[in-house]
Length: 241
Image (tube, rainbow, N blue to C red; front, side, top):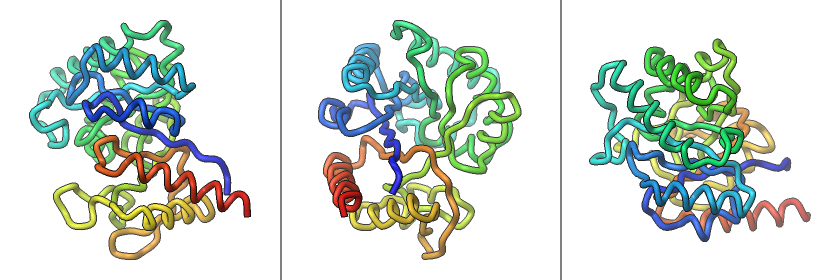
């Protein structure tokens, strides 16, 4: 089994950062769109530096009421301005733009960037304006990946262990059965398959091919600390066999 990168959404008011930063390699820090205050941004950046965790920005639709998890009817200009403001707010708290490793859209914006060419273009154009050297995290074969590569923006393909997959490689909607994975044994089976075979099992039991550069966990999952600790324990035992 090869080494892998774990990324985690932080700065969302879940108060998990102190416990989890030592266990992960990358973090996605909320920028104020769905969650995240200036104090939380600064705290997460500081913790990331202490634990040598790669720093990422996590912008979203400007929708705190729904935690950024519902698609918004918002015109292109307003969305662009909101994303630009979120990123600039985040960047102001960095010592240097070089400290910013990646950007990952949050929630409904993430899912819309996967399938909507227009929204993916808006996102990439904002990235190019604010921080063109960063890496964008997204699902494999997404519109966001395609638009990023067209503009020369680096991409890391992402896989999820705490979410269910549809047959087309996209995530099952949170309101539907199978969307949230809670069993750590299921997560470990997915991790093993992902690392050894570049495959994940869908909610229907079929297998899809996914080559991932990073593996995501959601910071608001009720058992996120336990799940990551157990997966790292399993991984260590497997490597020592």
